[in-house]
Amino acid sequence: MASTAARRRVLHVSMPTAAGVPAVVVGYVAAQVARGWSVSVACPERDWLPSAARAAGARVVPWAASRGPSPLVAGETARLARLIAECDPDVVHLHSAKAGLAGRLAICGRRPTVFQPHAWSFFAAQGAVGAASLQWERFAARWTDVLLCVSDGERIAGTSSGVDAPYRVVRNGVDLRAWTHAREGDRESARADLGLQPGRPLALCVGRLCKQKGQADLVAAWPLVRSSVPDAYLVLVGDGPDRALLEQRCAAAGGIVLTGERHDVAKWMAAADVVVVPSRWDGMALVVVEAMARGRSVVATSVPGIADALPRFAGAVVALGDRRALARALIVRLHDHIRCDAEGATGRRYVELNLDQAVSAEAVVTIYDELLAHGRPRTPQLTASVLDGPERAGSEARS
Image (cartoon, rainbow, N blue to C red; front, side, top):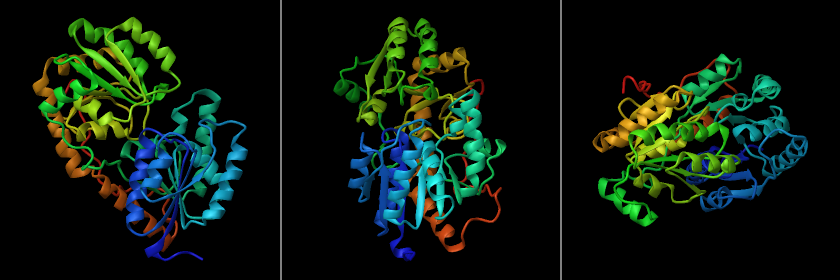
């Protein structure tokens, strides 16, 4: 028997347990628990998502799952089907590709299902694997009551690729109480706390060290930056499968520090002059929003989900694969702290007005309520955003 609206039962499923996706999940969980709902999170017992979900008031049900497609999918799907039956949720909210695969195979449309890709899986692979991922997303749309995108760019990429489902757009937000605007004095204080040299121009890149996040492109562009700003240095925060390769390339490039996984990202952003987001594909990189919330200028690549997250005059958007343009955008900002601070202030104001986590979480609650009250939206091409998209950021030439 379905629960009442006052006591909804929601199950969130996520294979990623660190970085951006879990941060979004925990934000939704906290808001839903605050409404008195019974919220569960199915995820692997690793990294920080399980403890953060428990701290937010959710029940965590361990779900063993690997990152990519493999022969393990059948077992992962069977385990998730048992967890879903045990939790008996009114709504199942699937986050990212693996949960979207196993969850929709387990449910097959028998329960209200929300799928949130957080970046399309068919951009992550080429050849036969990429083609199979696209065919799967087209097929699985029949078992998706709401396809929840984090940006208009992500939605457009889905519709233009033939993924025909009822779409909604709710952009990622941040907790404005936690992500306060870092001021000039905070920069030097943060550098002292982190053991960084004062006064030197600092670019920061935060993210999983993998092909998607584009650190290899940034490292390749860095010697061009250093030729113009010799005392500049770059910090890469994060860990991942490309770490060994990046360590070799960073040593050759010079002026680059790899910190590994850190839990004090806000302090690193306070220490930075500019935050770089060189993703090759993404849904809506949460790091863009976090950097703006900290009052930091952002240089990012023009991929769906990022370009439409960065408002005009908060930084620069450069063409994907154009290393010279990436280097030029960084050089301009590392030479001009006044410009960086002005762009950071613009970004902070934009986040305050448009990207509050509480507003995003409330929009998701509204989507659940509409789904449970009226069933699956009738029009597959429904694409109206719950939150209006920002003005698209300009190119580096314009900025």
